[in-house]
Length: 288
Length: 125
Image 1 (cartoon, rainbow over the protein chains, first blue to last red):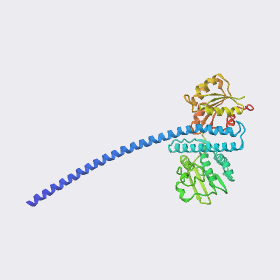
Image 2 (image 1 turned 30 degrees about the vertical axis):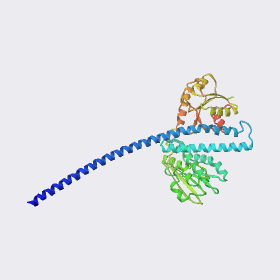
Image 3 (image 1 turned 60 degrees about the vertical axis):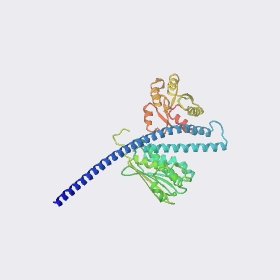
Image 4 (image 1 turned 45 degrees about the horizontal axis):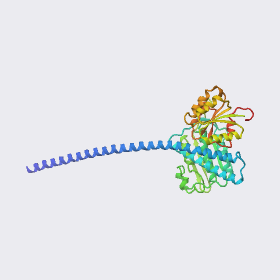
């Protein structure tokens, strides 16, 4: 008899323990849910704040770049007037110093344009034109733009375009911007040899290949090459003036055009950058 | 002599553009804002209008549309002077009735040639 009572008591105790455990679990589950809800609310608030900050940042940069450009208009403009002798003759020293003012003004303008471009791209506000253009002519214009820089270093840009390349539909200016960036880099990092730009048709569209016989890119820099501001902390900045934004902008522009950009490089031998763009010729039905 | 109407709110830009054009024997009448520009356009004869887009009050697009209502300016090119940053606004510039645009910051060495390119051929300025 005592054994049965003991059994019942044990069972009651066990049941009691199970109930308490179940209660505990329920409480913990409720607590967990409450915490998840709380965290979710915090995260969405943080996301809203981040998105708001992003919009603010873009608006700020757009306004700032306009505000910065307006005085630059005057600096570059009046320096040009003086250098042309339109306001009277200059002596050699004055000409030299004004030349420095103009070069600095133009460099500042490039910086502003680059910063604005990257912030526009990152904010998803970059609009691409869709108009027909001649990829061979775009390549030649890009080569012409960099020709003076190349000539200063005794280099020539060898531009080879496949015969009979079709017109394509895309953003000519942005394609040229990518090519100018790649060519300017090639010239910047090449002291002797050659800089080349090849344009050829591919099954998907068009490929642009920029090659040089420059110093090449050290292996440890490969991973971060397309990250913004890389040049600034790479130690190259002192020897090679630049914003460090060029390749980051190229990569993002090419991404936006649905294309790919890649490179091969051997230190001391040279680098080759290849841009593939899936651009198609205008359809036959489209009116020119 | 080629007569240019310049609408530009920034005093230094006004001076710069006027100076460059005068140096090439253009005559320039300038306005600080759209309203003044429209008033000048209504009372004078011009061969070309140079129009800043980012103007206080009435913006350049509105000014261009209003200028296009003025019969005196029939066939007279309106050229926007606008910042490179405003890509995508190019179409708006053309849609507002401009013949084209010149980018800011202007290049003092090519500016006058850029302006001339918008003038109908008539054997020099």
